[in-house]
Length: 209
Image 1 (tube, one colour):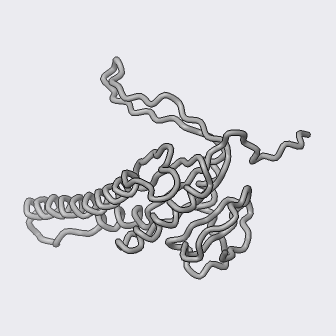
Image 2 (cartoon, one colour; image 1 turned 60 degrees about the vertical axis):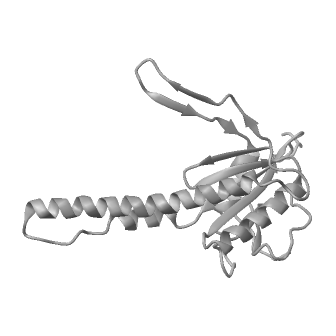
Image 3 (tube, rainbow, N blue to C red; image 1 turned 90 degrees about the horizontal axis):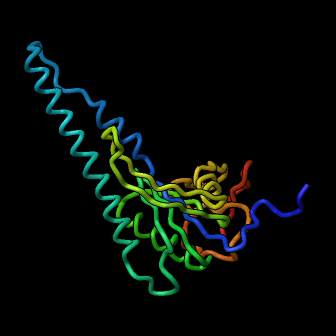
């Protein structure tokens, strides 16, 4: 059996996974609202269409607000250290890739504070490991199918997601938190970064640093 640790990754990256909390439930609840009941079937159909458009507008507004704010934070030049090397944004989440640990830490703390101030709860997972991205493609296939492809992979991708979704017990407020994967552990994140937890397969008790 190899003695090389699983997390060993020469030239690896620090990857931050960010997820907007509650968006799935918000989408479901918005579209499950019932229109006003009526005995007129034609009127009922019109009201249902109207309710659908209202729900679509509500979801679209919150979705755009999240993405516009995240894009603003990603575009903003870093006052200290280096900006992210790459970001992959999709649905209600994003992977943000860094070359150095301090740059990842500063960005995570700054972004967490900013989202909290703007009343958008997010949760993050941060890990170090291998990271590889392949050729990004956008095109129309011969059958007319439109394809967007942004393939990427690595232990840092897997572990940052695992850290974010670890669900560690013992945290006073698991919402709006930053979780660190167990290995390697950056030396320090400022106390103002909300709860900081060490996350592994089984999960360890969260601890403040």
